[in-house]
Every structure is written in C-alpha cells, then in structure tokens.
Length: 185
Image 1 (cartoon, rainbow, N blue to C red):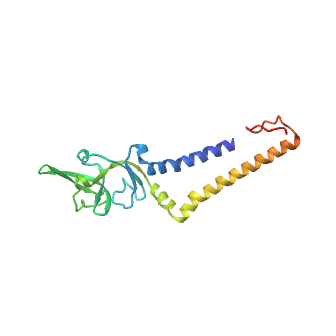
Image 2: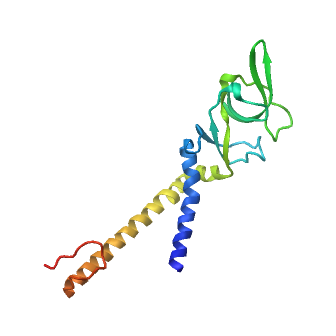
Image 3: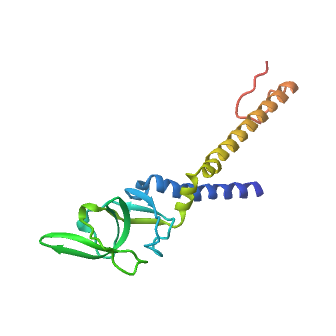
C-alpha cells in the first residue's frame, strides 16, 4: 500500500511539473498561439511577476475595452489592459494601462502592433522555467533525473540477469518470474 501511495504521489508531482511546461512550450495545446513569462509587475495582481501567460492571436478589430492584449512598442513586448478603443477617420487604435500603474500608457497601440489577447495564466511558473535555464537548473531538472533513470534501469537489468543466472543454476525451467522465456540449455 505504501509503495502504491509513493507511486501515485510521484506521478502527481510529475504531472504538476509537466503540464505547465507543456503549455509553455506548446501553447496550442490549450488553444493559444504563443507564451511568455511575465517580467514586470505592471499588471499585478492579475498577472503576477514570474507567471507564464498564453496568448491567443486575434483580429485586432475583435479586441474590446477590458481585454488584456500583448503588443510590441519598439523593441519592447508588453501586456496591458485596453482602457479605450479610439476610432478616428475610419482608423482605430488602443489606449492601454497596466493594472498596477496609476496612469495610462503614454503611447497608443496600433492594430498591427497587437500580437493577441490573454488566454491563460499560470502564476509563478515562469520562475521555474527561468531557473531550469540556468546551469544549476539544468543539472537539477535534466542531468539528475537522467542519472536516476539510467541507474534504475541498470539496476533492473542487473537484477534480472542475477535472477536468470539463479534460475539456470537451479535448472528450474518452469519459473515464471519474468515476461521472457528461459531456455533449458
């Protein structure tokens, strides 16, 4: 019973770590187009620093006041809330503001600068992704599990080999402890 409980807990931990990673790496799994890690506190508490966000591409004409949009301003990629959609001479643009900011953004966002709207947030998971990209994180998340997996498989192979040798020494050809046949030579 204890062994089964350990296995269930291990599986739950793997799922808890793997699912957000898959969503970050492959945002289309949840209907998104791309993902980012939130690096600024301008949208707190809605988007805490270190969160992973999944963005869905949209037609800028479909963006409404209140939507959180991802957009490009020069070299900077930003996610802020639309506070006003301004239409002038048949053209429109957006005024935006970070939820944690007192004042609206000093720029306007043109429709062609909009990358998409917020689809999903995974709070604080970006810290883990960032850490995994460091040398220590690489060792902990890639090398250590790989070494454990390899060591476990080598141990299993050696144990099976020892069992086969024991069975062959006893001459017990009817022993059914393995899924592979044992010859009686």
